Length: 231
Image (tube, rainbow, N blue to C red; front, side):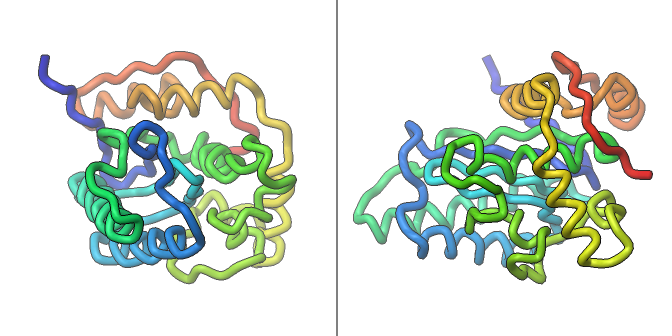
């Protein structure tokens, strides 16, 4: 049975998950994380993609990325970044073979309702794993940039994050508050399952909008209730 093509929308953020083969390590030390981040910066610039959030865990990565006008850019971006990491890691660890587990998983996000929620889901990974108390304490995610702990000039700040305050300081404080708000189980389940199944992260209106734009319908299961819309 042929493999179903991945569903990608132009000018739309996507929640992406890519895991190590057999859940093996893809980052063994700080140099591995830094190399991956360098390639995120290089290839998002070359392919004119946007990166709104990332979190690099020891055996998998989460990204919130927008391919821009060309939907093919998302696959190219993941191929370039993942391929470089494989060659680098294999040479460094004197190993061969695949570093990643098959194809990456992705889910188009309904921006005005779920983009901030997906970024929060991604950046809270180290907290859920019991690695840190607060997400901005984790070095290998975009969270520290958004709360003013670190600087990445290349990280894209989406309009919904920017709407949190009129000044940089206000936005950073509001985002911290947003991160530590409680998240409903319903929202968590929708975001997690949409990415795993390649479905839409959004509500029924988003499904209808996608049908009008593309002529294709992708259903989703469950509905989350995000806590903040853009005003």
